[in-house]
Image (cartoon, rainbow, N blue to C red; front, top):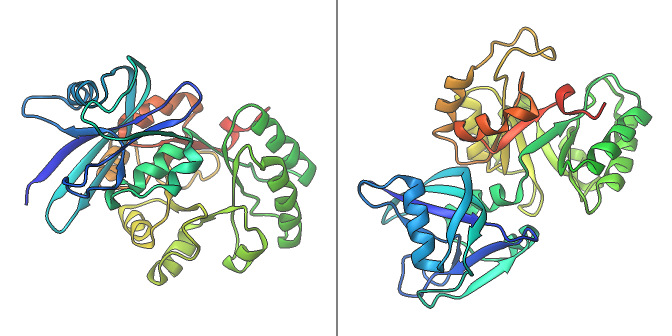
Length: 313
């Protein structure tokens, strides 16, 4: 069955809200909400199709857009490639030019709306930022908390509390304080045994590659209301993460890194090839800087993750 190439747009308003449209009842997956867009016609680039579809459907013209995520999904009756773009500026006033209802919703509210199954990774990508901060090893508890506070103040919205050399009891104490610093401002991802899940209901969980391999056969280990991520380093681990239903992944190491000097770098071309088959938002990690984010987008990633290069000095 031929895969249908479709463009879709995560359109952001001035206050960060996202524009949704409701599919008419007579369409495929009718009655569900969607990110506006439509089929790419023969001879069109994705950007040309995006501009045409948004003008036809909403009466707007995008003036600033970038790749966000590509999702391949197989319905029983059709196979689709959703080519999703983040539209941060446009001209015109959006209206349902085809009579379709529209809604501006906050990223947090997206999970309250019912979308076609293929749209679930787009919902995650629309809610996730472009930078993922991972705390450095070897810092004291007060140093970690001061750094987290500074990072959140500087605009970091997603961070992982990683302290592999720390005793469990100390890590758990710091996690409580870190959750307080992040409340309402940033999503904190914790690492550790899943027996801790119930003790930190506001936290997301980031699985190690070892945990991913051990747990993937059992399916997703926590509810869809909580963020779940996994560390991946190969096509095999990417497949396990997809099977488990994680919300996003890190893929590393892209380049040589001080943190793991013995690890063989994947390299940018191989990273790009690996992400061709990945539906989950992916952060690239290992030898990347915050300034590499545009290169990461072009490779098919959500953004970049890092430790030292991202940590507030």
